Image (cartoon, rainbow, N blue to C red; front, side, top):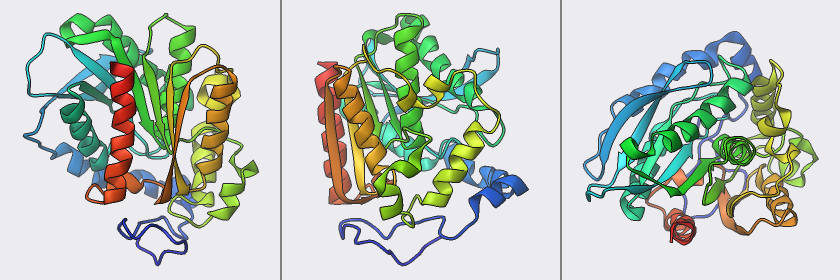
Length: 312
């Protein structure tokens, strides 16, 4: 719902949307949140673009379940392409939404690479371990089918926004520890990093912001409610971070996740990982949906500068 901004967000951005005073946990428990999924997916199912080639496929997850995914391919024909694995946000609870499709088009077109966007299972229906394994399954599928997918395996990286940033971080750690696939980088945009969020000052400072304190609490409760057999991967902050690829960590200034993202970046540095950290002044959580904003364009430019660096 729309609300009168409580915080001095940048005037370069549109008036934001928020869950406001909605009791998200009650909405989850009653099933009303799940009923909203069909409404959210309609714009995605209707999404069309003439800027890149958009195709669909499905890959097997760890349990044999077929997970649908979208591929955004530049129009310029090449024998092979670099690739981004895009893990979308939505509090682990929501499927792909239209802004993720639009972002994928931009990245594929501007960077001349394939963007793989998996529609992984969600926490309203499935345990957290299933979701993380779905995400890893996309990576495994791309590497194992690189020839038919026309992917350059030495130029593959992961990208995630919000809860997708958590999933991208988890996949990066699993990639290091399991099959020996090599990623050239990881981009984490205003990422979820730690289930112990309330110890960070920004949670109280911006508790009523676009992504608010109560929503964040409900997100983690739902994600972890069935327990986990892999806590160090489900919660990226709990794992050791040595041996990971270069990282770009972007933080929105007026966001409850701001400080945990910074602490995660510092933990990466302490582990010997090269980190580029970018604080977007005046930005709220999910600010980059406002694609016409000069502030958003600068944010995308910074991300793509890092992408070009790791792909070069």
